[in-house]
Length: 305
Image (cartoon, rainbow, N blue to C red; front, side, top):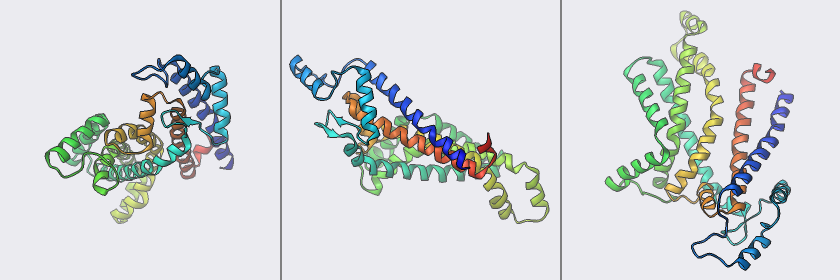
């Protein structure tokens, strides 16, 4: 197990390096720059800003300098925030984004597992078909469309919930619901399929034939064995929450790191783009690492593959 953990940890560095390189190249390949405004700056000012932030250096040197500073925990400065450190800006919105992501993951997991279990236990029933249709609709509906629908219904028409903002429980309801919809649909489909496969196993029929209570059969033999495929999708679900938070935070005006990243992209804020990308990439790869370690702990065959 120790060797497997070390091998998995050693893969994190190359993955983050590849993400940083691809982001850096794409960022500089897009037309425009951080000093492009509605009222163009004079060339002397632009040259001075480029020299101040090291943008007059060759691209390869800029990238190596970024990597060297990132290894020391310095992600550079933000151009649109008057030279404020990127780490300081990200830390300001981190608690908000973590609260939104954690609440959405908890709601998505709970709702998805409950729907998947109910659909599997009532195979081919009206509940099973309704769960499949609802999961397909939730998985195929874009985040901004679902958000606009909820705002139109609960804010504009019914006046039950605020349309934007962050800080109160009421303001959390719609953003969490929008962000949790896709994970809940995905987990419901995966858990239903996994539980149906387990329910058809011989040892389940044997357990029932021995007269074990149905509750014991479900909790001890069915749900436990059916959770392994669900654990494997938690990593992709975490990635979906990260990418979805960009849109949800911007749509509902939530002061988190996702909205900061979107603002940085529109402003061509190279420092904040690189810092936020590495920050989100780190979350995704660590989430996938935890999932892989959990799977290896549950199923020892995985660590030897």
